[in-house]
Length: 279
Image (tube, rainbow, N blue to C red):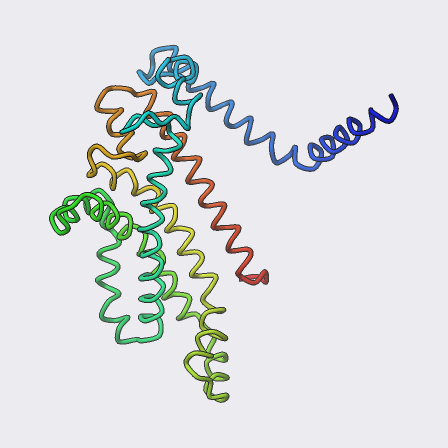
């Protein structure tokens, strides 16, 4: 009996250690979420808002099925929220990839070439203020097809923070570093790898982190133009058109959760790559 109880004691001790270490990090967010849900339910029950409360969303048959069966796939558009979200993530990945390539490359160009900066900076500052929804009709008119139009909306939303932060990072390279490079007569390749990239990397990652959030935000605007496709953006639009407000709210929970995970993933990659010294 004493031997068989050892694994249980060890497991219990591990849980206690974990709870003591992380309880102060876990409890406040949980209290905040519970408080928000309580206030939301009170507002809904009192009639101050016509939105369904958390209890209604969990108990309503349509939303309950979406909660319980996220991997459901009955063909066509009749899929669970996991597959809707996964389809959107694939589009975001494509648009974000091209935004990163173009943004970093152009940012380095205008950061290292003053004349290019003077020529292009006003144009970029003008274009970056255009909201994602405003690009939808332009993208459709220019590309004539829904899928490339949606990818363009994601791209044009994400590219600006990457481009601008990269340019700022390149401009912030200390003059001493550039002087040393001239004295040592470093080749362009060595200058890029040894001085420019390490110095600008923290700024580049700041832009990448902002851009991944904006790319994910733009998915709603991007997928509205793509009628009859699998994707979380079109799912929300279709649910709203059919007055399934509970489904809209549930999809928003998925969008928020995925956005949080994307931000944390980018932060983790940044800590792996960027040196740990103060920036």
